[in-house]
Amino acid sequence: MSKPKSRRTYFYFLLFILFLIIGITFWFISKNNLEPKTLVLHKTFKVTNELSEMVQESDVVVLGEYKGLDSKWNMAKAPFEQNENVEGHLFNFQVNETLKGKPVEKEILINHRYSEIITIEESDEVVDETGVIVQEAKNIFTKEVENKDPLYIKPAYGEKYMIFLKENSELGHYYPAIEPFMIQFDSNDVAQLKSNLINLDKSKLKFKTKVEERTFYVINEIHYTVVDNISGKNIDEILNSVKKAQQ
Image (cartoon, rainbow, N blue to C red; front, side, top):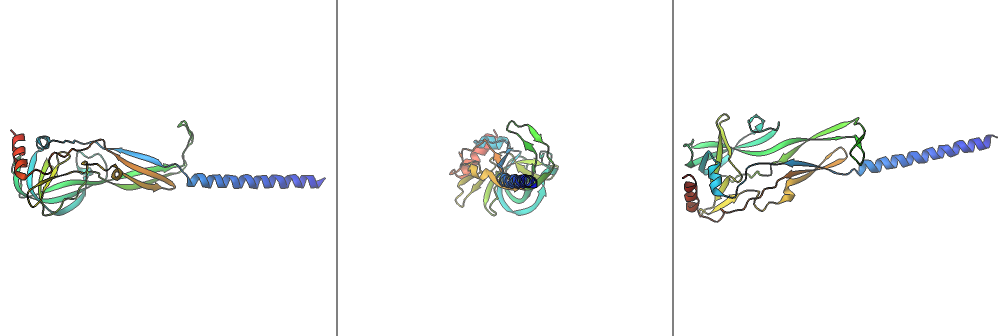
């Protein structure tokens, strides 16, 4: 009488072990094959294809050269910046000529927005195919990552530039009036418009990071491009256009 019972117990034990192995295997596979998530950052700013609009949007237009990096700072202090942790680079700029606006100091600070810190969140919350939460999160994981500003271009020191700026009198520096805002001139005084929106490479707007076991793709969404109507012109032609735009 005891043999059938012991066999039944043994059978249930094996069945339990089998289900346990299947469950652990399924958990391991699902944990290591999580679907990646995409985080889209919408970028909005003023963009133009016209030199005249670059002039009109500016408080100050100057001709001169970058001398070097003065300092890095948290732009969250700036009234127009809404993010809490944004790194700006303040560059020393030697002014050789003021083309628009009141005369400025011989050396000014120009701020270039460099990067922002974003927080990515992952949890063990379970959501069904319809988007309904079937299990509340018990654990929440966060990670801070640096998102480089897609418009940032490090200026070349000692080269001739024409820069289109707004003034931040409260903080004592200047910042880009519009995108694009820099024209670089070579040794023959031939212009090259500087902007990452010229022939925009969208692959550079995306990067990958991980939070726990989940892969995240962070995308800087930009719908603007810049048509270059400036490069190749000589400096005299550019100067005449700047004067004309102020009439």
